[in-house]
Amino acid sequence: MRLDQYPLAPESGERSSTGGATAVAHPNIALVKYWGKRDDELILPVADSLSMTLDVFSTTTTVRLDSEAPVDRVTLNGAPAAEEPYRRVAAFLDLVRGRAGRIERAVVDTRNTVPTGAGLASSASGFAALAVAAADAYDLPLDATGLSRLARRGSGSASRSIFGGFAVWHAGQGTGVEGDLSSYAEPVAVGDLDAALVIAIVDAGPKAVSSRVAMRRTVDTSPLYRPWVESSRADLTEMRAALLRGDLAAVGEIAERNALGMHATMLGARPAVRYMSPATLVVLDAVHQLRREGVAAYATMDAGPNVKVLCDGADAPRVARALRSGASRTYIARRGPGAGLRAGDGLPAGDGL
Ligand code: PMV
Image 1: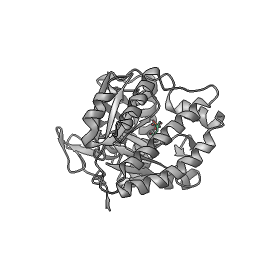
Image 2: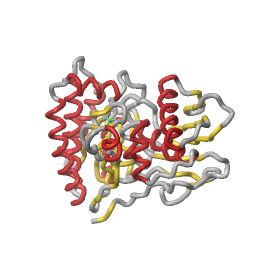
Image 3: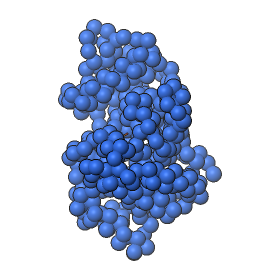
Image 4: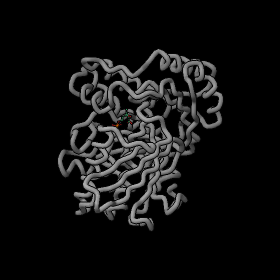
């Protein structure tokens, strides 16, 4: 047994010479899903979730303070951010400023290498990178737990991207300060496991319903939601045991049933939310076919039509080829690092990157 090979989280307080800070973070894919909040304001989830951080699709975010600026400025992939992402980033910076006792506005530049809005969790890498960069720029000294709690306020799944490898996000207990303090992610112990996730892109366009809206509607209206939460709690316990054993087939089986169950809760919402497209089902059929051929491959899907297939690293090229029946593009991802500061002009600051 060992803690995962990437338990690293950023060193807070390391300053760049420009007076700002640049951080890099990677997306994570949940194997036991976060779906539903008990507190929308503090982003406190109903249940624990567990994910693998990827080594692809990084987000790099620079935060510089500008004491003259009347408002924050935010660019996303070189263009001014649209209203909704701007509002979320500015609200997040208000939170950081409030905690740091600072008032300066910020210039934020974010570059994503993931197709934004395609259900590939760019919000997780985005808010993890923003949390690390903003905490540093505003001189807010936070340890990894503190950064995870902070990232959570931007986007729940971002709490897990602070850590590399496998991470569990504890739902925590209660509401208000008690809930806020007890809800954060941490690394998970894993056995000998060469896990890969093959990402099958079936549609890289923005999604019709945001995960935020879909989650709220599911919690409020789906009769399938509570039973799924119960089974998801059991899935999490079994998942941790399967990871410790390094039992890829068990990890995959639990992940697949947990994701399909989550999508069932959405189909049960009123009105229903359906992220799966015909191409999604073609990819799911290809995964079943692979299993019939003896390849341990298991599917998971998030708030979008794309499919991520868990398999052994050695099988990943074959799995990727098989998924091309329904996917326009495939990527092979492995365990990636936790979020971290980048020093000066673009060189990684340490092991965390
Ligand atoms: O953090 P959000 O609001 O983007 O929620 C994402 C939730 C899922 O990706 C669907 C599941 C998960 O646990 O990441």
